[in-house]
Amino acid sequence: MLNITFRQLRALATVCRTGKVHSAAERLGLTAPAVTLQLKELESQLGVTLFDRTAKALFPNDMARLVARVSEDFDVRLRDLEDEINAMRHARKGSLRLGAVSTAKYFVPSMIAVFKAQHPEINIEMRVGNRAQILDHLRHHEVDISIMGSPPHDIPVRSIVIGNHPLVIIAPPYHPLASVREIQRERLQTETFLLRENGSGSRRMFESLFVDVPGGPERPGMEMGSNESIKQAVMAGLGIALISAHTITQELKAGRLVVLDVVGMPIMRQWFCVTHAMRAETPTKAAFLEFINQDGPKMLSELFQV
Image 1 (tube, helix red, strand yellow):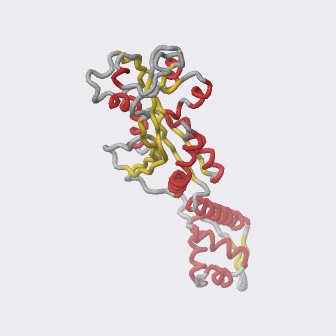
Image 2 (cartoon, helix red, strand yellow; image 1 turned 90 degrees about the vertical axis):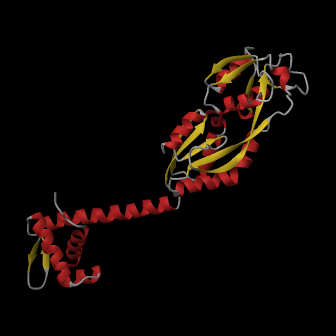
Image 3 (tube, rainbow, N blue to C red; image 1 turned 30 degrees about the vertical axis):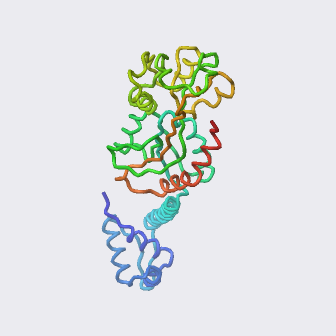
């Protein structure tokens, strides 16, 4: 492979434009001998003669003009590279990989849409999974930012609060407890609960709900892998469920589900933006975190008024 340097190419292109080594040296801020040396080294690398030399000037031949075009292409590409880097430094361009627990998919796309309107040339990839999956992505640096409930304790992270995350107990509107006020948790022990899989945030919340109730729930029901499946099962009368209030706004408005009036509910948690503490901060990541810090709480309250 040729060991041509950009300095050699620039010297050639400048001499082609000026026709004189001295004039090219002035433009390049070099001495005339230095420019001459660059040209000789370039000719040696290529194994060809690039100029017809006279006592007064150098006349580039066809080979020189061909190589000069390559130098001009490099100049253009370098200017483009400088523009791209400056755009990325100021968060006008770039890419961002977001991980979101499955419950967060009900609001994260709306936030992405607002952010994209402000930063149209930042490309965003979104991965959705349960808490265990998103934590695995975060642990192995497969996402830049994770949106979830409580931050993990076994991974070094930085986190900021997005806003409140209420969890409620839902039932079909014809359920016997639908019209009962101030339901004690002990009264729910005989109800059939529909549960998310192990590793999900709502499963952990369900387990903590009955931690101080002797005996706990007597009839835990089917385990389901998505909030959508749980909502459909509750509407079909297969049981009740602890679920994020952010997932049921449409069903509540349509009267297909109700929130039971359980004492101590809703369980109020928070949503977090979580980043790996060992990852460097990038301009695009910083721009998204600043956006969430400023607009996240307001957007959540506007999207969900449960």
